[in-house]
Length: 118
Image 1 (tube, rainbow, N blue to C red):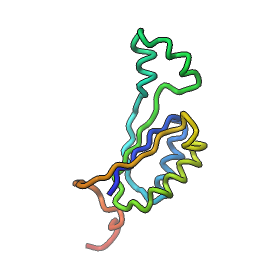
Image 2: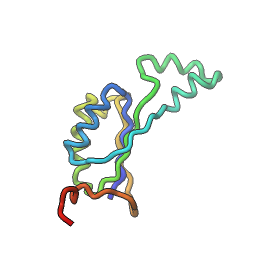
Image 3: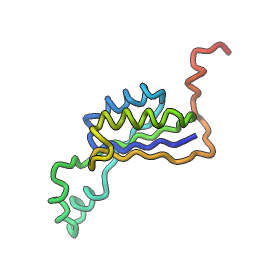
Image 4: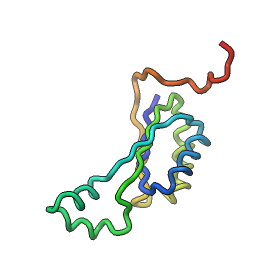
């Protein structure tokens, strides 16, 4: 099992990102409103106000999408789809994608069994 985390910098792409998750075979995720440290420091901490110049063109808020994925084989497909949606993960400012091993999880819904007879 893996925890898949994607920090999307362009909120306007959220619907397309979620479509990529479904196309990759991931049927459940949690979406969190998030904010980058640079934005917070430059707008909320007067000492760092000079950082605003470097943030031109960056949107101040983003979305963080997290999902526990039982089948790690879907991850390369998801990464490829996300890369297409955001215009290249290797380009700065598009998003951050990473996974973390999960050694235990409770409360997950087994979507592969939905609709199956008990």
